[in-house]
Each structure stands twice: as structure tokens, then as C-alpha cells.
Amino acid sequence: MYKISELPDIQNQLSLIPIKIDKVGINNVRTRVKIRYDHKDYEFTPLISAVVELPNNLRGTHMSRNSETIEEVIDEISHKPARRIEDITKNMAFRLLEKHEYTSKVEVLLDGILVIDVFQEGKGKVQKSLEIHIKTEGFKDVENENNKIIRQYLTVSIIGMSACPCGQELSRDYARSILESRKNEFHIDDKIINDILNLVPMATHSQRCIGTITIEIPSNFDIELLDLIKIIEQSMSGITYNILKRTDEGKLIRYSHLNTRFVEDCIRIMALNLFKKYINLPDNTTVNFKVESQESIHPHNAIAEIHSTIGNLRYAFKNKV
Image (cartoon, rainbow, N blue to C red):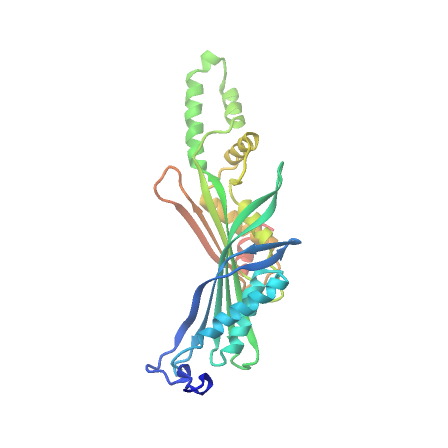
């Protein structure tokens, strides 16, 4: 009986059909991850995928090296939590490039829902969940294979709420017509009608609104999760909470109806606020925005997207900062 070490390496055989495979590896590896964020340790269980590029001359890749890489990195942070989530996938990408000596490109994906503590006025610390997606690409430098190039993209999604300005204008117009028809009965004039309409929040339809930012993380720059959460939430009509007492619910309804926004308004404010916060990022840094309003009076949703770079935002907002 042959020893395993004496058996031929089937993966290193010549490929039967000589065409490059862009991505081959493993996906949907469920694991437990530890990170330290804002002086507190958090655990969550994301799905991780790890793939490599396979040259056209090789028959197969060594997939066990991918699962070994994931296990090694996760085991290390079980003793000392990672400072940033993207460091986890970066370490995996570096190791995949080392383990797969035949590849020139690797990719690691991480998807999960992270529940963190945030401050809510009147409540103190409360929990908020956010969807996180990290894409890390690793390349071997064509001029120097010992040099590794890493590109990372962080995606964060948060649920807020939007209130429609068009619906509110319809309500205001209806209220005006009712008041004008009863001027004599209530002893009011046009000025009083305008004062009433400007004072009382008008009804409109509101809905959940999902805001998403995908931003490239340049080398030697940090992107903070709390920054992205605030940028998304502040672009919307209102913020959603797990717990709302009656007084807080009333405040939120009044605030959102005094702060009506289309998805178009939300996404432009989101882009402006991100640029103001990260104005020093390099011009070629890519950034994408998406807002999806889960409409309450339609069977369809409303969406808006912006695909840009910091340089393009710098040009667009040159008179805004």
C-alpha cells in the first residue's frame, strides 16, 4: 500500500482543457469571529468564501489550503480579537497567495450581521444590527512576485426610514382647501391658514429605507463602522430603533415628517456626508451608494444608486465644503 506522500499530485497534472479559471475554491464557510470594537469584544458568525485564480496549464487547485487558511486566521483571533473586521480577510488573502504559489490572484469574501452597542438618546446603550460585506482581493506584483498587493472593499447596510415629500404636499394641499372652505366658521384668514400649515406636521406615507455604502479601503487609511452608520442614518428622514416607548415614537414620527426625503435626496446627502468625513482619501478611491425604499403604498420598491470615486465627489461638491 502506498503512503499518501508517494501518491501523485493530481492537481499538478496538466489541465485537460487549457483555459484559465478566474475563481475556484470554497464558499459559505460558517465560522465564529471575534473583533474588538470601541473597547468591547464582539462575536458574530459570518460566512466566508476563499477562491484563487487557476492558470490554464494546471488541472486543479489545492482546496484544502483554503480551508486551512480560514481556520488558521480564525484560530489566531480567538486568542486576541481583531481590531478591524477587514484585517481578518486581509490576513487570509496574504496566506492564500503564499500557499497557492501558482496563482496570481485570490479573493476572500466575508458576509455577516454584526450586532453592536450604540447610544440612543433617553435610553443609553442599545443594540443595533448592521449587515457587513467585505471583499478582499490579493495580487502578486507582476514585476516582483514577492510583493503582494491588497485591495479591500467594505460594505455596510443599515435600515432607517423615509417619509415622502410628495405625499405630504398632497396632504397639505387638502388641509388648505378644507381650512379655506371654513374660513368664516373658524374666523381665520390666509395668514392664519399658512401659520397652521407651517406649524402642524402634515401626514404622508413612510416606510423602511435601506441605505448601503460600499467603500474601497486604501492602504494606510481607516474606515470606521460607526462613521458609516451615522452617514447612512443621517441621510434619511428618521432612524429606526428596536425599542420605542410612546413618547419616543411620537418624537420620531414628528421628526421624520418634518424631514421628508425622496430616495434621490437620501442618496445625495449620503454621498455628500461621506465625502465630508473622508475628504482626505485618494481621488481614485471607489465608493458606491444605494438606497432602497420599501414602499408602503406601492407593491414595488424605489431605489437609487451612485457609483463614483472620491475624485468625482470632490469635483461634484467643490462648492459644498
